[in-house]
Image (spheres, rainbow, N blue to C red):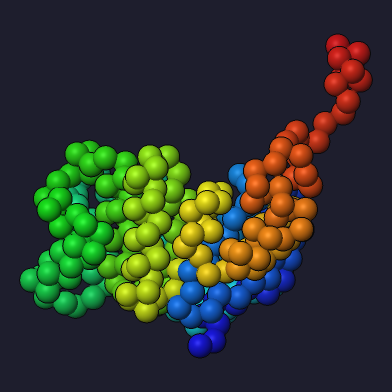
Length: 264
């Protein structure tokens, strides 16, 4: 069907701290793509570059054929209407009901009449199993329910691309499995394309069509879930099988302990 999102030789630094060193990947329409990596590997930074909150020092992000960081403010806001985002911590508005959280983007960015906005929001909540919670406040929800509301809000505008930033973090096994299955089902039912950024290997292997593993600022290996499980690539082997020893070190680079102790 063709690539909806193309990332080419992407570089980015926070001051002297280099985060991305030439990331390249392509997301095909209709796919669920998993972007995996340890904490600090640049996953969330990559999402900010996709959304245009940051500009790369080199390379480009092309969404729907348009270079994201080359857009004017107006052009960028227009592109973002075709992106749905589920934030790491859910990011629900604490003073709005569940229904109004889901309806927020529809009210802000469309001219739909209020009744149609409410019906559309209820349909999205039905899709995640929470139509009965429409009048609850975020403080009345469990962690798993909050994620499902955030998921409904992310798909409220029927985006071309849905982005999920650590959607499984902190969830109990039942909620985690439910959210993972929802992401897959909704992607297929809506004809959408999804990016799941996570360090949760087992769930991403279940739902993704293609996986990209980030390490040291680059995509070090990519493939289907089965290819990743069978891969002899040392990064894939360490990450997929949760091995302590491998190319990704546990310790941050430092002088030998004996040498540092002698200085004191």
